[in-house]
Length: 206
Image (cartoon, rainbow, N blue to C red):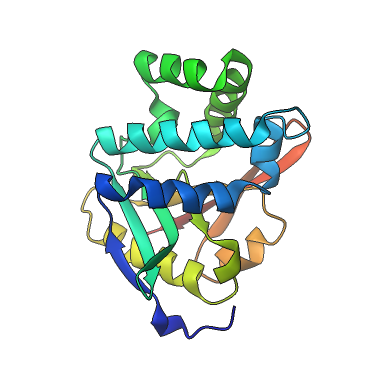
């Protein structure tokens, strides 16, 4: 979609807007290689497992009072980023209760695969007080219009205002991720392979 970068407006979202957030993230991750591997896209019920995961993760995120930043164009939510402050890295630090919740929602097999992936990601990241972006997505129809870069730049400005934050980290299995994130000041700090899918880890220091 051909849109001016300035057309998007960025804001903190509330729990009342979770339905919109979940719709954006499911659309964004449906064809993402890492998530296809994690939740067995070749097995029946992949869409349901993905939706259940996004729902459970967003609810957990909001229950811990962590931020969700949204991008709107003409009132429509077209992008969303879950932002975890240092010490609140979502499923990276999942409590026993949260892990049980994932297992009940996704099934034991998918929950174990996802938590194993998160354990690998945490071990590979820098030893610092970093913020974490567990889920970031833009609706397919709005990709290539500057929404994603604008959303991450807005998140970056918020991280810079956090005194305890040394930087921001994320992982991506997208084939074009390196060029995109490098252009926003992120550097690849490691790689890991999950079920044959290569995931690149990115970090930007404050």
